[in-house]
Length: 114
Image (tube, rainbow, N blue to C red; front, side, top):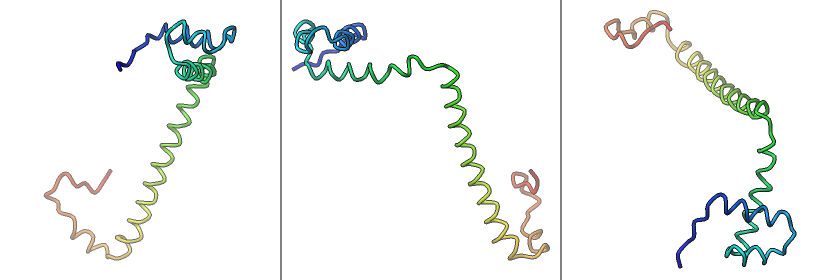
């Protein structure tokens, strides 16, 4: 059996007919030649997408900014933990002269400054 690929226009017509409820679910199924479960699935997708259609751009932008802010806070937290760990382990274990002896001035890619 070959799968049918329905166009978005066909899907929207079928889902709209199912949402209107003027006919039983079997009538659009026989009219369009689509299984009842498929019609119910498209109807549910349309109903779930309605809030997104009417949502404002400002709300969507706020959601994007909040998710980006949360991601950045997580990154800052990880970096703070790394810095604290480095301070506790490496700095406290060696004297200043030992630390300076570990620095190879010939390696330009390893900078002692930011």
